[in-house]
Each structure stands twice: as C-alpha cells, then as structure tokens.
Length: 117
Image 1 (cartoon, rainbow, N blue to C red):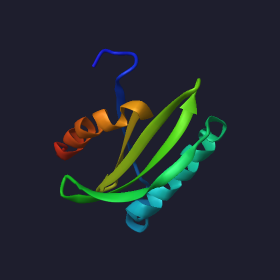
Image 2: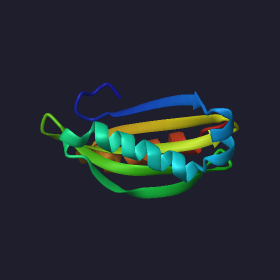
Image 3: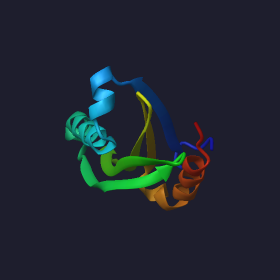
Image 4: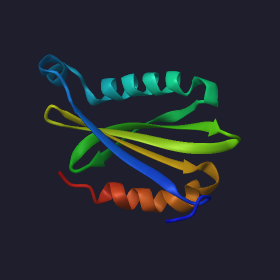
C-alpha cells in the first residue's frame, strides 16, 4: 500500500546460532532476549510491552511479543515473532501506526499464515 499514513512495515531477519546455543536455547529464551534488547533501544520512545504470545508458524512453535512506542508524536504498534528452524532463528518485525492496527491485522495474519520453509 503506497500511503504515508496507512501502511505496515514488515521485515524479516535471520541469523545462525552458535553450536551450543542452538541446542540449549529455547525459543522463549531467544524471544525474551530480543525483547530486552529492543526495549533498551526504544527506551526514549515510550516503549511499552503489551505482552508475549506463542503461535504456530510453518508447523512449528513461534514465540513473540507486542509493544507500542511513539516516534515524532505518532504511536506505533509492533509485533515481533521469532521461529527456529534448525540452527537458524528467523525474526519477523511488523510495525503499523496504532490507528491502523485493526485494518492491518488481517493482512499480517494472512502473511504469517502463508509462510513456509
């Protein structure tokens, strides 16, 4: 959607975990670590954690969290979802203006539901 007011930003990142980490770390631990780093980075932007969640993506357990933050007076709702595939951790960041969250939610759900490895 090419609209500077009504849009959603979706980014996917991946990284390989080290040998020992990939065997010992649980998805919940990775998610908690990501939330801690993100909350620190967004400290000056009114970061507020809304909560953690689990969902099924690609037939696997995925963990995530939702939060809000404000940039230049605009409130954003963000959802961060992480899923492990072997030694690789995929992180999906979705950002939307809070005013548009209800409208964008079905689009995000459709994207996540259509994911495959």
